[in-house]
Image (tube, rainbow, N blue to C red; front, side, top):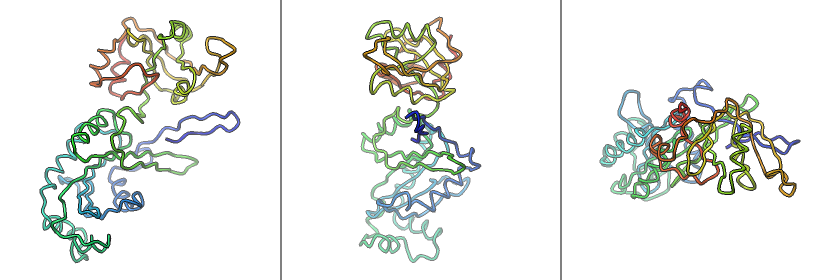
Length: 327
């Protein structure tokens, strides 16, 4: 995650990532970059790439073999992942996991006709003594996407716990001073399903466990707020245009509004002892809902068992849009 740093005000603001089409790229452009630079992205865990997919073929985007002979199957998605993408990469595992050495060797030599054989290329690269019987005894699945959605994260977490070797690799693209920056995070085991969802929809708890004053203040002054460290810093995650839902424990979502991007820092409940312990942000298009949306309904719409006691959490765009339409 990249932040703009305001040195004078000692403030940071999150910089939103871009999609591939924002920089004029298609998915195949990113695939080519991955294929030609995987060793740069993986300086420690070396892989020998053996194939890149062709259009209109039922093939993984990339396949590679590591120093142990394990087969890596990559599925690349240009933006948000979907449940079907996870099923797709596992289907490739079903197909190519049954490949014998001769099958993979034939595949490899089609792409690299100047090589003697797959086994000789592997042993030369890794300075190893692999035998053909060591090849493809295990498969490892890698899903690459620009910000995995929470449902796919949760599915990856589930299958990993069941013994399926599956990981998410997350990339983000930023434009800073006319330069294009790539932030690439590899080998994310057991990812937090709600982490890094960068789609601009957030649920904030109104903090009624400490009395109704904080919630009343938010509703009357059309704002979202968080208090004390580290919870107050959650407000810094909001960007202009983000859609915010205020959630009241035991009731549900009671109000909604659009973030204005200006953070206000002040006393908590106007107590001079708690200077700068309230971080808040005004919300445009603020609306108190006629019918609060209970936790059960939110979970039904999202298909996720959210924990509502946390100060803030992000939700996916599809769920956010459905909740936004509620009156």
